[in-house]
Image (cartoon, rainbow, N blue to C red):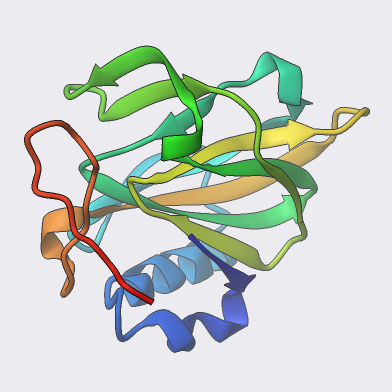
Length: 168
């Protein structure tokens, strides 16, 4: 998981070159005030989303195997919750057509402000578009980057996939 101000995206461009496509698209959304919807972006696609946040209790964690998510808050306020997938339990098994698995458990709640982004990998479970106590409005961009286009290997921790071990 990476979380930072959008203005610092260059720090991460070496490991995720497609982040540049995401930033250019966000600039286009701001400049042209693009409406909600799905748009082609680089080697992936993006959604422009607007809505009201939901309670953390109403949401489940999600993970994706085929795409990285880059979520950029443009306007309003939102909180999201992060957890390592290994620390959660499966609620709905992975659907390869929709590229989503639903999980339950608890993690760390994080406040987003306009101009911030977060990037999540397949092992990064996330609950986007939430609030602690009072619903808020938000406008955001979610860019999906195809994992097989990355310069580095990404593990999904699915059965049958060779696990990568690290020693510190």
